[in-house]
Amino acid sequence: MKIAILASEGAPYIKSGGLGDVMEALPSALSRIPGNQVLLILPYYKKIKENPAFATELVVHYDVCLGWRHQYAGLMRLKRPKDAVQVYFIDSEYYFGARPGAIYGDIDDGERFAFFSKACLEALSLLDYIPDVVQCNDWQTAMVPVFMKALYHQRFADTKCMYTIHNIEYQGWARGDFFDDVLALPWEYRGSMDMNGSVNMMKGAIEAADMVTTVSESYSRELMYPYYAHGLDGIISNAAWKLTGITNGIDVGTFNPETDRNLPAHYNADTFVEGKAKCKAALQKEVGLPEKPDVPLLVMVTRLAGHKGLDLLCYIARRLIWEENCQLLILGTGEPQFESFFQDLQAEHPDQVAAKITFNLGLAARIYAGGDIYLMPSKSEPCGLSQMNAMRYGTVPVVHATGGLRDTVPAVDSHGEGGLGFTFQSYNGDDFLNAVKRCLFLYNNDRDAFRALQRRDMCQDFSWDKPAQRYMDLFRRMCGK
Image (cartoon, rainbow, N blue to C red; front, side, top):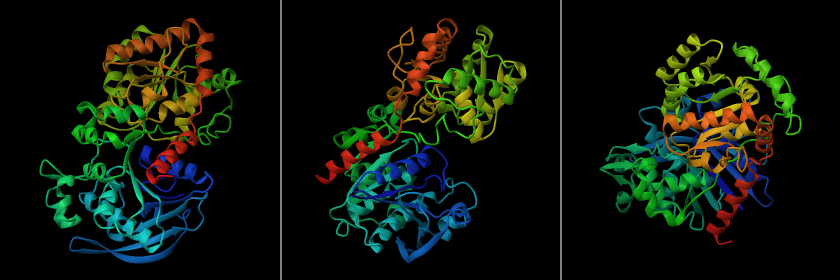
């Protein structure tokens, strides 16, 4: 099957979050399935263009029309791809090459990614690559299914389009005149793009795509409720007939305690007791905590943002420290109020709290390996990867039962049996604290049961093989194969 995947970021070329991880792993997993030909197209950002590790060559250059604009686009091909995925970049000095900062956040982001969406379809035409399925992701490529249906229906008459929502919070809003000035679509598409007098690109994609997916099964159901949908619950509900969820995997080659070069000791599901003890001692020393092997180490690697449940952790942190003999380690950067809170907490309790306000992938791996309990109280979580990374390293998760956290961390009972971690249902600090204390009780009072839970977590298959097969099942259903 010929599959074209279009996205605004993808590791190792460019990454700002979970989408970048998915766009590295999913195309690779699909390309390993016999009979598949997979093509990935990303913007040619300045950081990619100036990185000597990614040698490219110009395939063709062309103009892309956006309303009255005629903008240059160059199609660049990666010379030495790391696997069977054919990787291309859309070059535009105006939209991508001359932007030195973050990949998102410019005032003309709507125009930039409308250009990218249209440039991708033009590129496929020029390559004479007519895919069976185009898979596009989040609001940055939301115009792809709309453009396909409105402007490219003859060229891609037999091509189906899957639109995947990774995070519904960011929808691609623009002023009402954006429809005529930039998109220049036929008038009959105005209704599908309009929302409260403005243009909403994600709404247009949901209505135009042949199938809509989310990155976990629970998240697909949650999006039909106003609490989660950020205004699109009615649109999602109307599209329920073509909506499904596929829970992401993780890169089990990178996140592997047997081979991870960031760790001071390696281990597997049979040797983790000794291996994690060594990693824990080294981690405590590295972050300035007392080396106490039997004191539970609670860890969290996250963006310090409200929707990650940091407000709950701030609410319970001092009670947790006063009432329990435990240590708390936080790694991440983000909103100033949370950075300040954890720095102040560390100053008050230097023997129990370490706050590392930085971005450090190596330290993150050592935290996954050296921690005993992983905290993830997210208010909402489309899928979440950290909880799977933690379990892969034998660190027991305590999570809010929402979205992908509900799907990947079924709840254990009071004896640590029947699931993979501890959960709480209502988003409030007291329920979170209760879940943490239940986990600590098991750790302190039944270490054998806690270790059995750790081993069970480590034996789970969180690879991309199963999600890739689910994508293939949907692709075949879309194409009638």
